[in-house]
Image (cartoon, rainbow, N blue to C red):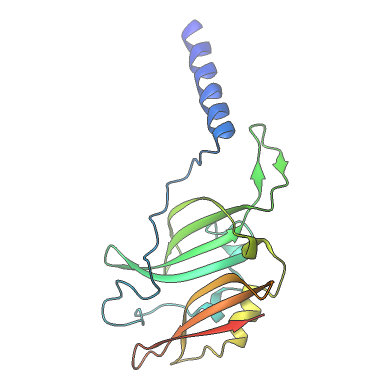
Length: 185
């Protein structure tokens, strides 16, 4: 009996320490490449995958990869696999499971481009731009002109430009692999 109590106390203590220090219980996500398109295997067009304008709208309600609104997206080639790095707003909870209002709290996940299987996920601090209200990811993606067969969105990032939060969208011409940037409100 004493051993059981010690085990329970140990588990509770470890959980409390993790909550107080801000440790995530999920697997950590690898650092992103320095530049969009870095490490691509000669193309920006993964075979058989869904385009951002096709999946962004349903993602928050259909995938454990996001906690809420999508505030960042990047196509990457990691460990010989095409993945999406997705940043989203997320709810923070305290050690009792109660929701804590923290607008800077977010989630970053690495998911397979075909299945959206979560390969890794972790807590992140959202930038000022990611915390700022503005048009949603799907609205910005639709306005970007993404269409089959080109251009393809390979990154969507929230930034502050002229004092306002905007979307910086990088697209790739799938025929030439040329990257272009545009800004959307």
